[in-house]
Image (cartoon, rainbow, N blue to C red; front, top):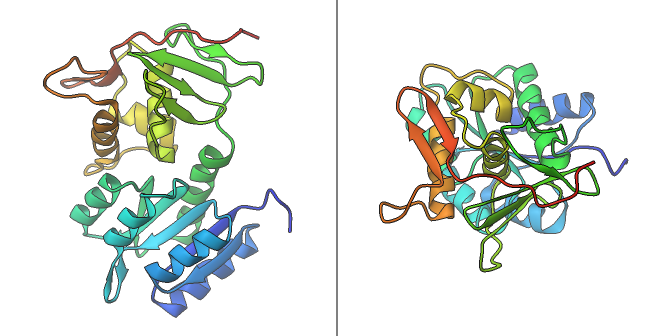
Length: 253
């Protein structure tokens, strides 16, 4: 099997859904495997390189949110949670514990595949498009960019965030992509719809809180508190922006 084949793990306690999703993904060029529990998923992730996990939050006796929390203590790959159509609270909590995206049951297989492919592009092939002047970003020798702001360094090639004291700050795929977009457009207000389109390739629904939740996660990791200036500012009625200037740190192409 090609090393570039997308590796997807389906975690669902319903064997019919597992077989349906795995079969569809394999028919569309993915390498898909499945398991019925969080414990089995953790074993699989420790044993095999996986790009994306599709995690149903309703795993019978197990709480899928607890599984997601456990995964995010050591695994930073792409995580899509599956919830019931009306489970808005579970979607929000799932995003808060580190999911990159969600789909609601019953889902269309084509939509599911589109969500997986969209996330895969961000997990495996970071965007190397040249930044506009408002981003004041730099290209490294490999074509990727670095951003420095408020003592942090964001490197798009290694997909790492480093604090001023040299600590690596772990980010999920969704957090990294969102912070990258804000850094490229430092000083410019971006609406929730713009941010969702730029990071997830889709429009926001009327109750979509994906961006708000991820902003909250980023603020905690960046140390934004009431006692210090915010790195990410909320603009009422507008959206969000990176307040600190993002400066060049590499040679331009």
